[in-house]
Structure formats: C-alpha cells, structure tokens
Amino acid sequence: MEEIREANGENFAVHHLPHGVGLVGAIVAGIASVPLVFYLPSVERFNDAYVTAEMPDKVDLETWLEVGSCSWSWMEPVLGEASFLLLAAQFARSQMKNLGIRPYTNFMRERRADKLISLYPKYDSTILGQFSRVH
Image (tube, rainbow, N blue to C red):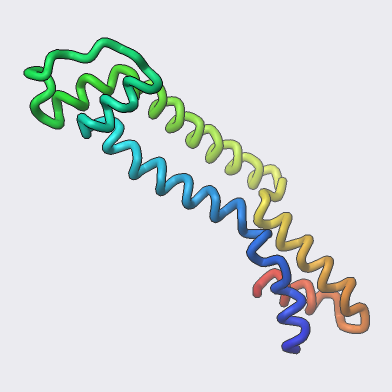
C-alpha cells in the first residue's frame, strides 16, 4: 500500500505549481497595492518609472489620503481591471462546473488516477481511482 501511496504522490509539487503561483501572486499583488496607492515614496517611484504624470505640490501630499487621491487617478484603472478579470474568471469557472467541464484541479486528479490504475493493473481500477482522487 505504501508503494501505491508513493506512486500516487509523484509530481505532486508540479501538479500544484499553478495553484502556488496564483496564491503567491495574489498575496504579493495585494500587499504591493497598498504602498503603490498610499505611500508617497512608492507612488513617486512608480510615477517616475511608469506613469510620468505631473505630481501635486508637496503641501497637497502631506497625508496618506492625499497621496491616495493623487495616485488613484492612475492606479484605479489597473486595480479595477484586475478586479473585473478575477470576477470574470470566477464566473467562467462557475459556468464550467455547471456544464460539467472539469477545471484544472479535477483534470489533474483524473490524470493522476489514470496513471495509478495503469501502474497497478492487477488491482481493482475503481478502488485505485477513488484512492488516488482522495489522497
């Protein structure tokens, strides 16, 4: 049984890499968005490197809310589009599930189960498949 468990776990990290990349990307983007909107040194560097908009006088950038008001004019389209993209992706995934189309995770579970069944043809394929999908 231990041999079957090990065979089932092969390439586990590779199969879960897209999920890990998505998780890390979401965390980094979420954390980075706060200083890019409200922290003056980050706003100034981002503006100099990518936006090149005229910044207000220093007297108009004394609080974090004033900084946010200044940077929001160029950050709002980016953050708004990212939010809409995530909303559309969630809706598409929901509709895929309604139609019986298997998203990536289920596709990989089935692929892993098929591989395990082909490695151990003497065992019952139903039991091996269920074992693989659960573990």
